[in-house]
Length: 305
Image 1 (cartoon, rainbow, N blue to C red):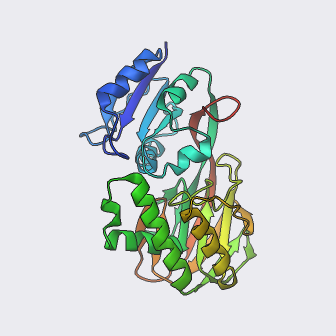
Image 2: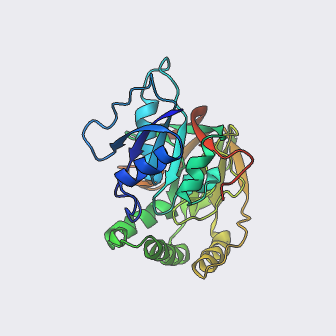
């Protein structure tokens, strides 16, 4: 019987599943488990010697929080695969990994699941942070994050209502935001210009489940880079409008493949995963892909039910 360590964010999403219920579900599926809340003091004291894998029960922010702890450990320590239960609002990482929202199906799939390598982006040039799992970018999305916080839309308790509020605000920003000059080298080739956004994607979707890189594979050893110009503004607005209406149309903007990048964005706003940051002045940021630093348990043969 496999031993697992549960790291649970009890505030993720609507907080419908308690820690006690979670332990009961996982034990009933045939696993030995211990539990910690990521809100508890010293939750990060994970003894790896007698653990087969770590269960992350939460959203994308919980994944990043735990990944930061695991990535800071010494190379010689035991590498633990991660089993993800998506309890957050957007759950973009889970969507990319092909996980359903049915918790029991995901848990049972751990018995026969395979390990999926997950690359990490190393960031040089920012004071913090030093890595990303989902995406790194300038322009439209950090502006959306700032506006969501300013207008207190993040305080909405209903995940669907929060997602719709983000899409509506994003649509207005797509129509009104000015483009910014960006000096960008992708694998030492120059793609500089003026852009509405610049996103380095490690997974398929960003923010309110926008599929900016629908073919992205976080374990393929390459980033998907999205650069959207002023000429493509209307196309992007149409995509967001359709999503507001409940229709997912193909996102067919050009995608660049990258293993390393150098960027100077003529602005002060940036995001790393789902966190917004403001910098004092434009600066040189270097991004390098680090292959397979993490591993997730995913269903064999594809998506869970």
